[in-house]
Amino acid sequence: MPGFEFFGEKERAEVQDVLDSGVLMRYGFDGMRNNHWKALELEEALTKRMEVNYAQLVSSGTAALTVALASAGIGAGDEVIMPTFTFVASFESILALGAVPVLVDVDNTLTLDPEAVENAITSKTKVIMPVHMCGSMANLKALKEICSKHKLILLEDACQAIGGSYEGKPLGSYGDLGCFSFDYVKTITCGEGGAVITNNKTYHKNADHYSDHGHDHIGKDRGAENHPFLGYNYRISELHAAVGLAQIKRLDEFLVIQKKTYTTLRNALSIIPEVTYRAVPEGGEENYSFLTIFLPTEDLARSAHKALGKAGVDACFYWYDNNWHYYKKWSHLTNLTSLGKIPNEVKEQMPDYNKADFSKSDHWLGRTISCLIKLSWTDEEVQNRADKMVNAIKSIL
Ligand SMILES: *Cc1c(COP(=O)(O)O)cnc(C)c1O
Image (cartoon, rainbow, N blue to C red; front, top):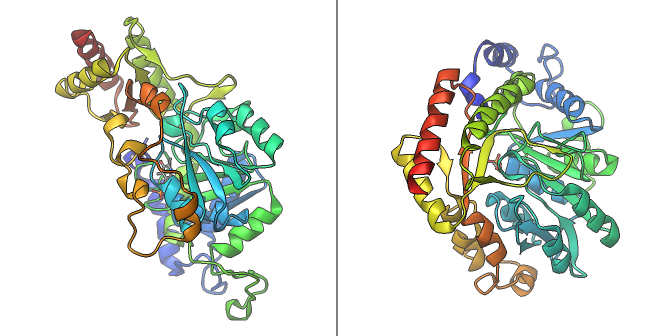
């Protein structure tokens, strides 16, 4: 990742198709569009590749999460369980619907800890939202069992793990709903875009209507369509979908490259016994977009991260100190700093995260360094990087 490294002829040709007809909107204008339906084609490609019945494209990954929650009927006061380590989009989408984000610890998978999830369930809990961070997945089997037991919805945020799998199923397809992002730095990108996938016909229909102002999409006259319920505009444009269409066809090519690079780097690091790796749940296969390691202590992780930077090993992240991906820096959430008034349900029900104990998350994230795998590196560059990583980490142990 990211897919933008490999933009080329294929992306240009798809975009040119759209520009030639001039129909930039995904719905309507049947006569003008010269049979170009890029969003529809991309949805078809996604259902095939992700082995699901339905895909709904939207304008971003954040929109995908919001639409997925809305499609399942989530609203004011419903509680959604999400991890302490994720992107801010997780709680943004929940709050957008007036629902309540309930933060829960991560374990050595760096995703939701099933035991902590079970402890956080209340009578208001509706959804468990694991986030497959940095290319690897949550223990989906355990989470699905919890969902079955408590009649909850399992929503997978697979924005960072497209192409990975669990028990042979593409990530995003295992739960009731799955979400992808195609923003500029994701494995597959179209600039801005996202998708909701599901096997549930009602959720799909709801997502289709909700993401387009509630349009029921029946008939050929947009103005005459009905609006069975309130919606919003989370549509993707044909231009974005065109780029995505070219990119999705290259996903498996990207995954092969990522796996090869990941393997080379990991093999090189294997001579350092102090370096260990995030746990991948049994039956899971990463998408290899990051190599994520643990150092024995927080101090050593901080030193290793510094040493890697000094050695010129770029794109390695120490998420523990990150402003956007870890709960410690989410003061705007913790203090509910908002431009407008916050719904009473959120104010009353949201736990006080200034007082919460997430020491289990801190234990893992404090020791974690995650290095991005780029698609464009040559074999020589990968080898060079491996050597630098080994030397940098050895130097601080
Ligand atoms: C990128 C990302 C999102 C949001 O996607 P956008 O398309 O940028 O809105 C959501 N969740 C995770 C885990 C992400 O990495």
